[in-house]
Image 1 (tube, rainbow, N blue to C red):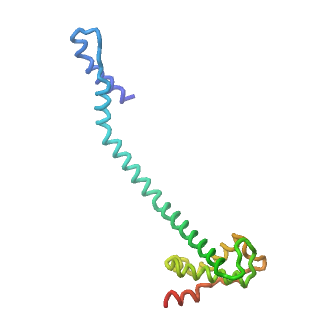
Image 2: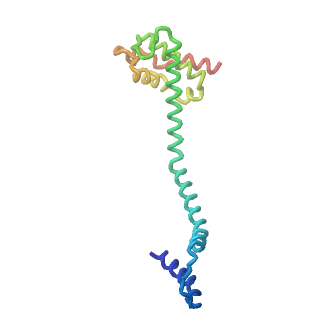
Image 3: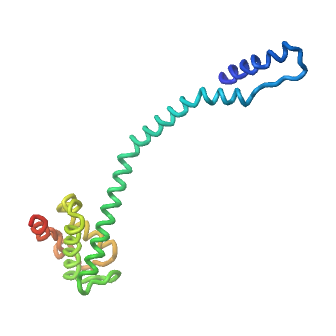
Length: 165
């Protein structure tokens, strides 16, 4: 409402010379007035857009980075498990594995992570074995007889020696 008052005053003042001259037609340069108004508010709009963008980056940036990192970890784990299936004789993706074969797949997947993503391997640490087991379980590759007692929860012990050496 308040924005209309200056606009109406400007239009009245712009039309005033036409009334003073006694002319029957009134010409209001709306295009010029709109251009001047836009030129006046452009810096404010750009500043607000910049502040909004900065706020969004500050709020959403860390969450976006976490999402990207989680997707990267999941992709590397998936790649390692696929390599484990490919490298172990008797391991066929989509089939239920015997416990000894599942342990070989876990060890090969851990070795693949050591070779291909050593920083991720270090980051995951002792949780790597359970993560690989969970991935195998989610794919339906583990038999019902599989348990923490007969699965290799620490496949990285031998792999650490290779990383250090």
